[in-house]
Length: 307
Image 1: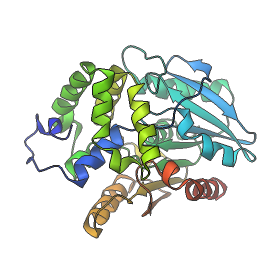
Image 2: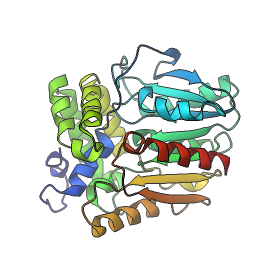
Image 3: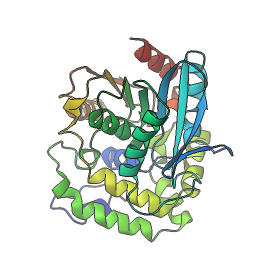
Image 4: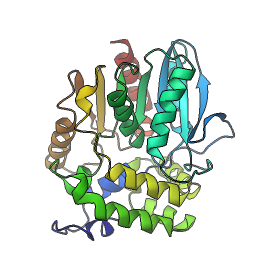
């Protein structure tokens, strides 16, 4: 995948390294094996609700579903009402045709209104973090605290290593990648995910969970989501966010201080225009922080929701 992403740009092609795998980790994300549950909320997602108290939406990443957030949700269920989202086309959920993430956003806003959720907090992982930024910057008065777990307002700079990257620069790559995904079999999608497994989670068992989720995801849906992530830049609008934002990064797979410093700077720049935003990195966790450091993450989310 990292070779494909250089096909349509003028940037210098470099050998596969941490950043190439890091790029894979933010797009090719899996999760835990799905159970047979869902309550249909919209065509673009389903919802499971557990617990009682202040509402919190929990959104997984690409090719993940609500099971990724279940242990964290259970740790919070005594004080919060958790709305666990599963997006169409991911982890065995039926796919839909056409645009995906714009429909998820609009239908989530409708879900919030329909269910009379008063400024729910939004906790998102990777693609789910992007969705949290999207919701909060589109409807700032309707969204409460945002907790973004290893995801950004714009994904593409993770590929390019610079926040100078624009949608116009990425358009060709994004279209090419979408076409590639559309032609993939489930086995090819699984094989592509395997390229970046070491960056996803520490244990072999958790890495296998990521792989299993990829095998049950719809390649066309994944490709559409990747296209939308690479061609949607929320950085010009995140200054609209009124609520508190906590962005949590994972640096456990970073080989040296230079990589860690570069990642932290890139993350910080993307949230610089948000009035009340905090950045924190976990040096022990890889991309799936909820798998690598479940107790730490649950405690950190609980603290952020109370602050």
